[in-house]
Every structure is written in structure tokens, then in C-alpha cells.
Length: 100
Image (cartoon, rainbow, N blue to C red; front, side, top):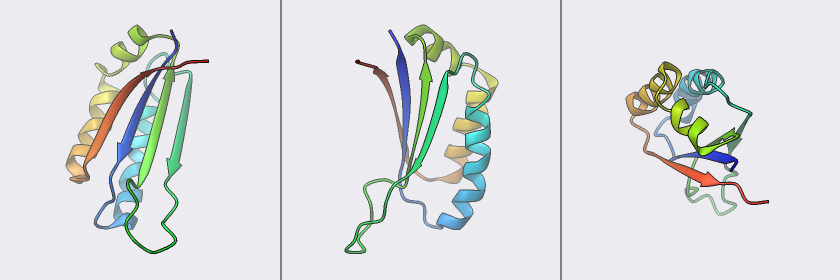
């Protein structure tokens, strides 16, 4: 079954600094083995000026759960998750079964 890993990244204290780091995060994600597609998105700000529920999402698509599971054990994944942890910006990760 096709599988997607979604990273939901909370609002950073300093978005400009985070964007510099995020370039490295995205570059690491692009090196995941058997990655079929990568989708990066920035959450739209709320019209009333209050904080958004998240700052960014990063979706990584794979042909199978096994491919996705193997990819998160690689050096590229270590680099990606290490950079996010170092940024001190909270994030969540989800593995999803893609339904047609």
C-alpha cells in the first residue's frame, strides 16, 4: 500500500531563522531512499492574526509502508530529525496509508 509520512511543524519563535534551517531539513528529506514524491507546504496565516495550528507540513510519499519504515532508519532521516530537534520547534510525525 502506498504510504505517506507527514511532518507537522509547530510555529517557531523566529520564523526567519527557522526557514534557513528548513532548507536543510527539506534537502535531507530529498535524500530518503525510495522516496517517490515530496510535498512541502507553509500554513496560511489566520486572518485574525492569531497563531496558526502549525507552521509547515512536509509530506514524503513511498510505494509501501516497508519503504517508508526503512527510510526513517537512514542517515538522511537522522539529519532531518536531528535538525528539527535542534531547532527546538515542536513537531509531530504521522505514517498514513494512502487511500484512493
